[in-house]
Amino acid sequence: MAIGDMPLFWRRCLAGETKPDLRNVTLRSDYCHVWRSDSLLAKLGWLGVMLSRTLHTQPLTDHERPRVFQGCKGKVVRTNGQVIEPRSLLEVLSTPHVQRMLKISQAGVETQQEDGAWIIRLLNPDTGEPLDLSPKMIVLSAGDGNQALRLMFGLPRRRMKVRHVHMVMVRGELPMINGHCIDGIRSHLTISTTTDYARRRVWLIYSKLASNPEVSPEELILRTASKLRSVLPSVDLDSMEFTTYRTTRVVHGMKQTDISLLVEGGILTCWPSEMTLAPRLANKIGQHITSLSNAPTVTQSLVDAIEVKAVASWPRPTVALPPWETDQPWTTIDTLSTVVG
Image 1 (tube, one colour):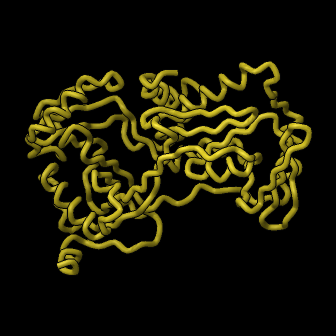
Image 2 (cartoon, one colour):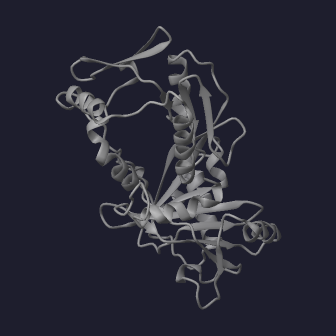
Image 3 (cartoon, one colour):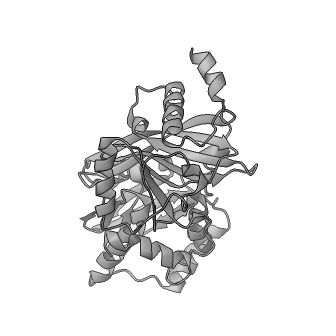
């Protein structure tokens, strides 16, 4: 499964035409927009977007542009990339398998080898009850947590690039927008729109400043607001509320735009560089497992045996609340400017 196949594969899953069936996943938007400022560097970056083989782009006339792009001097195109709610995706993927999902802590995992095979002991975090597993293959896919898991299985450290990302959120009566602003050789600003529990629109904004640890939340908000006013002049930000949150993005080695899969005996360690590539990674893992002469087979009796032990007393993991639904301070630009000034 090539990188260029990703948009079509996701679209087919979301339509229920192939597995996994994602028809119940909440869709933020059926397409994205890419627009640019009027700078020389933005024009060069725009050329790269137009030449991209992974994007199907449709140029929009001034009449066809959504209202949010009124006043933008640069060009606007629509792309074929769909935007989904990550929390909804996790809920849809996990629900059919909830009986085989166990909530554990790192301290509740013990590993040992017997005759070349791994024995994994899991401890119930509520009761301390042990559950011993003897897997034929182990897949580690914990992002930043892969390093600790690898050490647990006696594997050497691997070079991982951890990017600490500082995101801005804006909420209020905002227009719907999902896309990227080109203001240089690369995307300068990425915005996606969701809706919170109070039916307010929320913008999630990534900018060039997001990876700079020296920028304070207050400065990040003010500079992001300034940039928004320049690239989306029709949007009134005065009554909107702002806040930030921090997260991490992890890639292995030099693969910044593709998956990474390490095979070490019966242990696979994997990293997708972004969620869009998760199907490509799953496909690679499946190909590797089925290519082995001693590939493990999952029988219903084995599944039932695991469920019998686990259902009664083990707690189940739940999908975490997204950052815009957590309790944190929000502020307006006027208030923040007064405090900072």
